[in-house]
Amino acid sequence: MISTAIAAINMWGVLAAAAFAFVFGGVYYGVLTPKFYAVAMGREGEPAANLSPLFIVGPFVCNIAMIVTTAILLQVTGAEAIAQAVTLGLLVAIGYLLPMCMMIAINPNFPKPFYYTALNMPYLLVSGVMYATILTLMA
Image 1 (cartoon, one colour):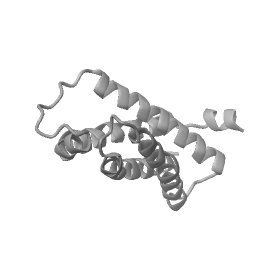
Image 2 (cartoon, one colour):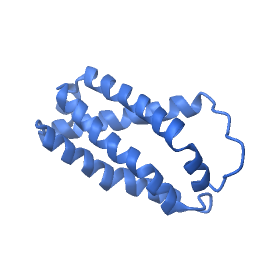
Image 3 (tube, one colour):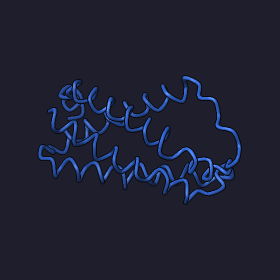
Image 4 (cartoon, rainbow, N blue to C red):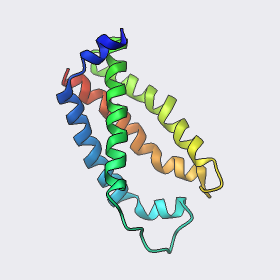
């Protein structure tokens, strides 16, 4: 069943969702939230960190993994309608991405774990829904 689902993945859909992730992530984290992110990390007033290629390539690769996994879940569940895709995207975001974000933030290196999670929540919810929706539209 899983191997059939993997074989049925539309790579154009994966690429379209990856392009969305790249642009949305850049706007969200690069334009909309840098000052809030500094507060979440307890670094307000400090100069912005220099971004190495790892900070661009790393999230892109992680998003590809999430997009491919979402594509497999769409295939395995038989979701074909946009409403089903939105539901699956929300399920993944609320059931996996947000709790994982919170679990990572609950450690001494994150001074404001709830703030950090709330700051990431819009990105995780929108991206989870959009990955599933894009993949469904391009199936």
